[in-house]
Length: 106
Image 1 (cartoon, rainbow, N blue to C red):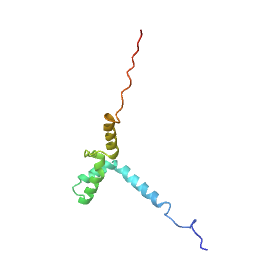
Image 2 (tube, rainbow, N blue to C red; image 1 turned 180 degrees about the vertical axis):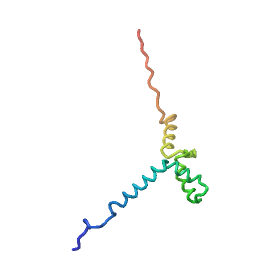
Image 3 (cartoon, rainbow, N blue to C red; image 1 turned 135 degrees about the vertical axis):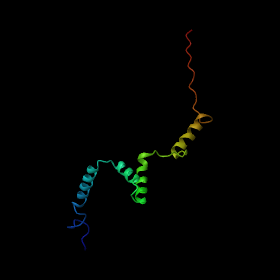
Image 4 (tube, one colour; image 1 turned 120 degrees about the horizontal axis):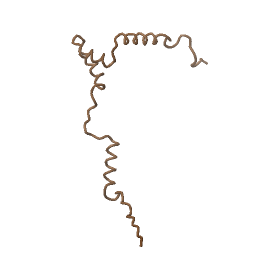
């Protein structure tokens, strides 16, 4: 039988490969003193940057700058809730009024 699974020496990603990249990225970010949004906007407004890069930055920055447009359509849950409220307002499934309580002190 052939061995299956288990530890294999030297297999997998090197332990320090990802750590060095993160350290370099953090150093560069600290030097720039910019938030990611500020960086995206600066690239987007840079006339010397490639058009494709400017477009990608505009797409990435849009959710942080602009609110999501409402198209006026209700979702499934909201639509179901609206139909339930409409059904309970009148007809067979209407909420009945409470009995009138009268106190007679004679």
